[in-house]
Structures are given as C-alpha cells and as structure tokens.
Length: 300
Ligand code: PAF
Image 1 (cartoon, rainbow, N blue to C red):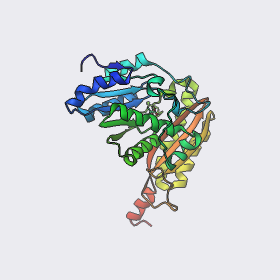
Image 2: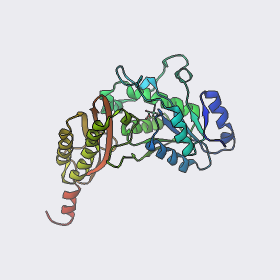
Image 3: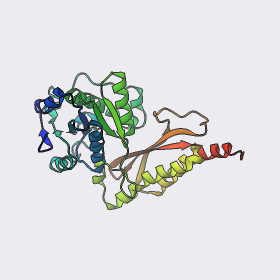
Image 4: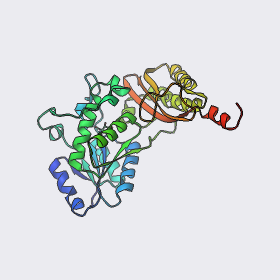
C-alpha cells in the first residue's frame, strides 16, 4: 500500500482496504489504541510490523465509551487524530481505523457484551467496575472487524493484556495476542496518554510509582515483605501520590502461595492518583532470590 497510512473512518472502508491483503494471504497486524499516541504506541506498531512483514499493519484509534465509568475522564480524554496520523506515518502503518461511536455501536450500547470473569474483579477491576467488560467487548469487536492474525498490546496495562489473552483462549479467537515491554521516560515514568494531564510538579511526584516498583524488584531478593516495605516507603515519601493499590501477585495475577518459595516469579502492580490523574504501572520480580542463592552456595 502507498501513501501510508490511509484513514478508514468506517467498517466498509476498512474492509475494502484489507481485501487485497486477505486475498493474497498476507498476515494482518492490529494495534488497538485510544489515540493520543506516544513512543509506547510506536513501539507496539514496530512489534506488529516485525510480526507481519509486508502484511498490513492497522492501528485503531477509538476512545471507547463502554470502558469508562461514571466520573471518569471520557470527556476530557485527549483526542489528537492529526498528530496520531503523523506517528502512524512515521512508523509505516498502513491503515488507521478511526471510527465514530455510532460506527462501532450502531444501535447504542450493545445488548451482548463480553463477561470478563473473575480476573476482572481484582486490582483495576475492583476500582473500576465494568471497565474490563467494556475493554473486552470493544477488543472483540475490533478483532471481528479487522480479523488480525496478530494483535499487539502494551504490558503497562498488564491486567488488560492478561484478560485479552484469556478471552482469545477461552473464546477460541484465531489471533496471536502479543504483549510488548513498557516504554519509560528517562526518569522511569511509564509512557501513558494520561501523562499529558500532569503538570511539571505532578510529573516529578509520579516518578514515585516506577521508583517504588524498582525498589520492590531490588528488595524482593530478601522476600515479599521487604519488597512491599521498600515500595511503600517510596510511595509514602511522595506526598502528592494517593495510593489506590500496591500488590504482588503471580505472573498470572493469582494470589501468591504463603509462604512464598524462594525464586518465585511474581508481578508487582501499582495504581495511584496524582492530582486528578489515575496512573498504573507494573514490573516483573523474583522473590527470595538472595536467600535462594545463599542456600545454593551452602551459606545457610
Ligand atoms: O489500552 C487501550 O488503549 C484500550 O483499553 C484498548 C485496548 C484500545 C481498548 O479500548
């Protein structure tokens, strides 16, 4: 395809644009987004390109009302389509699917939605009831419209990624769901479209989230409690950070066994408000590695 990217505001245009690739059997890559694109999204586009080669990469730009609760930031969520198209052009994206709400939900709110199951009642789901039903419903619709072979999501939204993987497996959706590493600013702040709500002072305070996760990673060598203590100390020191949750789970977001066997792989996840902006972040960690190493060296 030339003159990339081509903007497709309707399902029909999207389908026409992908028809040749489908006929030729070329794989289709999808990067679902809500726009306000940044370097983190660009990395997802590069991952999609690496996976589909000369097949088309589609980026969807759609602020999905179904995943916003009452009092959340649906109205003020940044809508920056011109700038988004420039990011997509730089990354060699073929099609930008940017439908209206009516195009995605022609009859208003859908009667049938995707029930996300128990994984949606912890962490983000506890603070944002209904959020993941909205996410999975729109992602299922995008999978139906684009019919991608590969879909790429960021690990920053770790629970979302886990639920989308679960949906694809449980509903036998023929799509390879890929999770890409979180992209961070030099200071450690995870890139997010919502970072643009932060003023200079809040941006500095927000660094406490990634600092807390790095501190947990380091202290995890000595056990779960030291990891949580180290993270909490960083968060407490940032006065403008209003903590929602800080939790360590298995990589599948299940509760950890008690006691935690040395060398256990885990995930630490945090959500907090800085001013009126809700931020989330997460990292992998390994619990009890230091104790385990000492065991292996016969020092105990
Ligand atoms: O992560 C996002 O930007 C959104 O939740 C997604 C996956 C595009 C669904 O609206």
